[in-house]
Image (tube, rainbow, N blue to C red; front, side, top):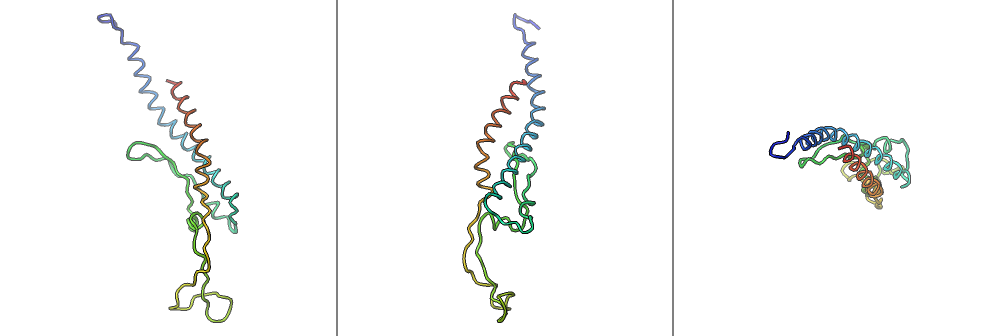
Length: 156
């Protein structure tokens, strides 16, 4: 409508497109983060194989998962890759190597009551699988973010 020589119809159309695109952007962001989380999960499993982690049962590798996309208090969305294996923190951060004192005879099995749980004979260094995989994935993630943002802007 042209009143006093100013036509605001194009501005109204642009604001409508912005509102519509913001609704679509939430879905797009969620899908994007899920895809990137899956890529990071694959990189993490590959890093675990490269690190030489021995697999007796495969529970460590099966336990590496992608979490849900969640929003923080300041509105930023995030996704995490984690391991739900009970021994994952020992592989990631390292641990003391302990030998049980035994029951007198035998080859050191069992714990003598009241004598503690064993003695430390060394330290096993952490493999830092998640840290290394995250550092290796960071440049790829940044490029993907830039491409996704450019794509969302071009749709507007």
